[in-house]
Image (cartoon, rainbow, N blue to C red; front, side, top):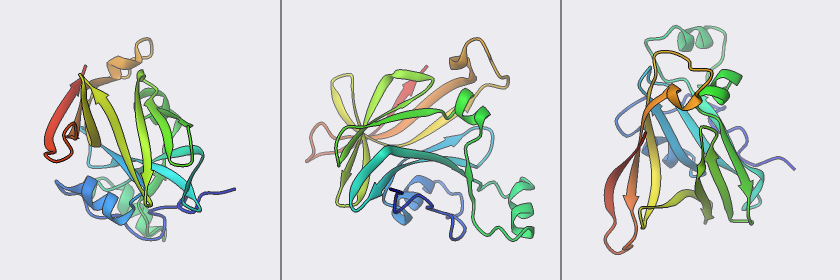
Length: 189
């Protein structure tokens, strides 16, 4: 059974890159639970919950790139070829060295999600009223993870994959007290 939203962002161009790109992407597609920005260019990686009839599929998550960097030739070449959308699958290099992920369906509305380079850090993906959210407890606080920024290494490290990601920062909302959510940033590495 295929997901209803398996082809998100394949119908028209994605929102233009901006300081609020994560919000713009999740507003257009509510099943997007995490947007990853990178230091190398303005292209983003999107992690989205796959749903069918209001329930998570198995596998429950898909990751893909949105090509937003106007300065690169890639986007104009795609338009010249008649490709009017910005979605591109993650390739093997992406999945192996930077953006690889795993996921496991727990129930109709919950999944476990992790990054290949940080397998010990598990996140919860929760589906509520057709909207996906990424949750994690960190240092005894509950956080809603919205986006991340990765400062990439200048070289590919084959023997120690974690060295490919120089610094990772997550933009989060502290929801320990749901009546008073607070914006915060969490750093890894």
